[in-house]
Length: 439
Image 1 (cartoon, helix red, strand yellow):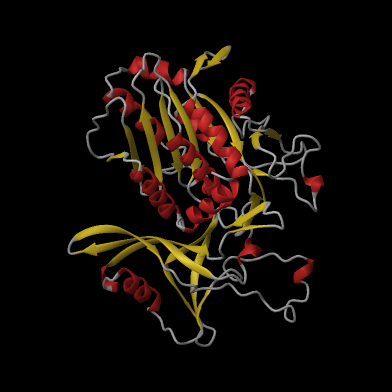
Image 2: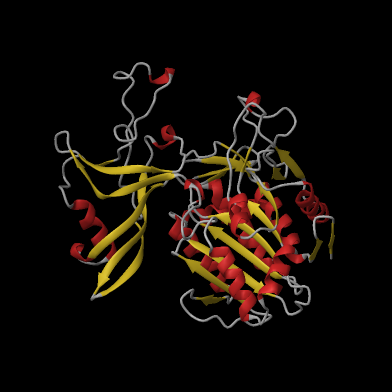
């Protein structure tokens, strides 16, 4: 597939992934088309060699796996990303009245977003709603296909210093406008009930988030760029999924994971810091007839690629990145390093990944933060607390990370898929931390 076609498929994937719950529902739709078997965490698993499976937790995290037929050297080859992005969550008592007849929606921040990027944009709502359906409580996906909110800027005539820098107060400045007077108190729940075709009294609880409804685009005179909400980190979720479906290795168990709550620390029942990955791998191990000793041996021989987007050099502020360890859009996959271990990449794991990329003919870049600046972190080192294995942190270079509308390179989705497909098609034989072989 051409890189432009993949970029447009990515945009469509993101459009369907309005919340972390929708992200996982979209991933499931891809897997269902490939006849993956769904496993319920609350039921007994009967796993067979040569078959493909997936399981979810909380409706916002997913782990899928392909079981090889020849598992004499049992090990797992894993890629992992996250399904959430910075946004704002609507509070349980959502409506704020006034001044005058205005009706506003009460929100709080989820993750480290760039507040200013959310002003004066068409906004929607998406997430899940718990509904009492005749005594049986059900979780329903909710994504209203309509521009229903906006966060208006204060006119420059009232805030002459706004272009000199302004500190936004989330309780004051970031409150979305819902109505100018036609809607009255109670309209919010009535809207949700109408969209779900239920009675408002049957709505028990909601996890709903603001959605930037600005459409993604491939742009530039030579179509060099892709801009969209949620590139961080649905671009990585997408490339891992496409590669996982395409790749096959009969001598390993290939695993694909997308975790929720990375943007708020991963320390939830469905986050990378939870037992979700460990529980899943142990259940695979046991269902296939292996014992606990086999599990520990397999983990020592396994490898994981943590996929979360990376910072591209800013065209107007190159001084913010390291002089040499820096990344550019459309120049290949980025290996992320950190001396303080915010990223898992070390010489051994980099060696494995760089050899894979060399064989896949995918260019590789390196990113480290400036030594006088504190950078971010991701899910890799947190998941390693529960399942300790060799791991490398990678990403695709992008601008404006954590903006409501981010920009990347249109070639990089293809590079990422090629690298991860080669990873899943390869058989990685690891011997401690001293040597490895790729078949």
